[in-house]
Length: 436
Image (tube, rainbow, N blue to C red):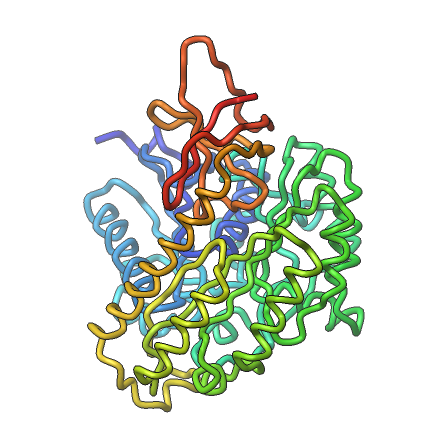
């Protein structure tokens, strides 16, 4: 075992859950570094301090967070780490229970308690660093959170319990932050929030996403801007005008729709029905021809009948989404849906989710086959095995299709750089091509 002196002041930050948590961890790491901590992200070597940024969204995510906490508590018992701290959504939501069940953790912190966490470590919160981060992603792209919290009343969702009400970050601050990232070499901004389309309502008294995206698109060095997590009800169509007019705003939209049955959408309190949803999809595609649409759905919401499920299947088949993911419903306490009877058996939930993904797999295959012979601007993220791995403007990292270019002794593809790639082959979720 290494002695304590070899890992003195070393902090290992472990991040679980979504891109919003990744963003929060990067902010935390910048503050720790400014306080002269030797901080790393999910490092393998021993560290004096471990900070676990947890997820508490659905049951599987909660269990992963608990298992990770127990893993590092065990490491503490073995003398491999000295302090274990827990922050993030799970800690915000279940702090009292966690303190009773896992008292070996040195302290628990909520989602907005970074200053208190730093004070516990005898560090100062440095206000002059607001917006600065230590990126955990490849240096050429960064998640870019424009707001915190959510005001939507979705019946299944516990996020407002963990993240609070919607709070937009000012446009001036976001422009400053984005400019800093561009100066560091970031070429792609992935805009994120619990609800992107609500941006500005609290501080500007209007939906201001279009103006924000337009201003970001003028920052020198930013070559791609990508929009994630857009709520369908009240969608601000003027952001599509910016997408169409500005070449560095990707023709891509992540718009979680959650279901394709009007009855289920009403029970979910989504503020929109299937017919209006389909009209919105058509309108988006008319405004931005060729746009790639990503969505997520939920299988097995309380009361979901076979008819509701078939309605969702038909909706997916007609809509032909470029990208789609689906969750099985998780019965979360203190949500409105928790008052309902969780009456769809787990096995049925999974069967329905599998059927949706099988349908989507066929759609994805057909859409990818149509790309063969076309040439796309591609951003290369990494090398994996025998391939350089990149993405087109229609693909977000980690969740979407990838472009694979075979490595050869004579081929050099710099990571973080753009190249034009001609697609030669395609399967359900990957494209294979050559540099032009």
